[in-house]
Image (spheres, rainbow, N blue to C red):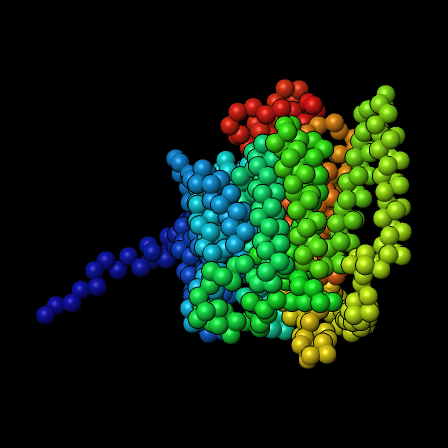
Length: 552
C-alpha cells in the first residue's frame, strides 16, 4: 500500500502565513470573549447559587433559606423584558388588604408546620402582595422609574432608609449567631421593607395618603374597643377564636408566646394587649395613631371626618388607659404637645387677623401647666404617667442595661454583634431569670452598631423635621398631613427609648413611605413650579390630576 505526504510545500506555506493568522486571532479575541462571557458568567452564577443554597439548607433556618431563594428569584425576574401589562391594580388592592390585616389580625393567628416558618395570616397577605409587586416592578421600566422618582425626591430620607438596610445585611453577615440573624433579616425584608416599597409604588396622590390614614384610624377604633373588652372581662378577645390545641402549640413553639391567653396585672388592675403580644406595644400604636386623629379634628373636610378624628382621640385615651402603660402616656403627651405647638404656629402664621391663635395659645399653656401639676402632685395620675415604686425598679433596671451594654457597644461599634442577638449579648436577666432588654436604642447599638443606630434614628428625625417645617410654612392639605405624620413619629421615637419590641415597626415603615411621597411631591412641585397639577402625579403616571402642593 503506497503512502504519500502530498504537497511538501504545504507546511512551509502554513508557517509563512502564521503571523497573519495570529494577528487575525488577536483581533477576533474581544468579540469571542464577549460571545463566551455570558455563558461563563451564567455558569459561575448558577454554580455559586447552588453552593449558596446548599449551604443555606444545611446551616440556616428555613426562613433564611427562603430569603436567599427569594433574592435569587428577584434577581432573575429583574432581567425580564418589559411586559405589555403588569398587575399594578392587583398590587394596589393587595397593599390595602395587607394594611388592614397587619393592623387588625394578631401575629399569632398562624399555622405551625414542623420544620417550616410560621404561616401566619400576616405572612400570607404579605406574600400575596410580594408576587404581583415583584412582577410589576420587574416587568415595567415605568414602575421602576416611578419608585426611583419617589426615592430621588426624598433623597435624604431614602439615604437613611437604605443605609439602615445595608447595615442590617452587614450585621447579619458578621453576626455571632448567623442562624438567628438571618431569620430576623428575612422577617425585616418581609414585614418592614416590603410594605415600605409597596407604599412607595401604590401611593399616587394625596387622596391615597388620606386613605391610608383613614385605615389606620378605623383600625385604632377596633383595637381600642378590643382593649376595652379585654380590660372589662379580663380575657383576651382574640384568644376566644383559637382552638385549645392550637393555642397550646403556639405557646410551646416560642417563649415570646408564654403569656398568651394570660392576663397581665399591675397594681391590681388588668393590662390589655388587644391585637398585640404586649400592652406596651398596644400603647405605642395608639400613641402613634392619636396625632392622625388630631389631623381629622383640625383639618377634616366634612363633619364625618371630624367625627372620626374625635372618636379616634377618645378611643386612644381609653385604649392607653386599658394598657396600663406609663410609656404610652408619655408618648401621647409628647406627641400631643408637639401637635398643639405646630398647630398654634400654623394658625399664627396664616390667621394673623384672628384672635383664635392668641386664645388657643393661652388655653393650651394653662392646660399644660395644670396637667403638669396634676402629674407631679396627684398620686393616681403620678403613678399612671410616671409610675410608683415598682416602676422605679424598672427604671433602675434600664440603667443597669445601659451599663452592661456600653462596653459591648465599644467593642464592636461599626457592625455590632448581629441582628436580634442583643438580648443574649448584653446578658441582662430579670429577677425571674429571663433575658430581656427594655430599650430599642440599646438593641440597635448592640445589633447594628453605631452606623445602624444613626441610620434608623435619622429616618425618625428627618421625617419629623420635614413634617414640622411643612406644617408651619405651607397652608396646604399635604403639609397638614405631613405635620400629623411627624407627630406620630415623635410618639414612636419617644417610646423607642422605653420599648425594645418591634411589633409596630411595620406601621413605622409605612408612615416613612407616606412621608417619602410627601417629600417627593414637595420637591418636584418646587422644581417644576406647576401651578395646576401635582408634578409627582405626572412623574409617576397617576390617574387623574391632583392639586398642586402650593394650592390650598
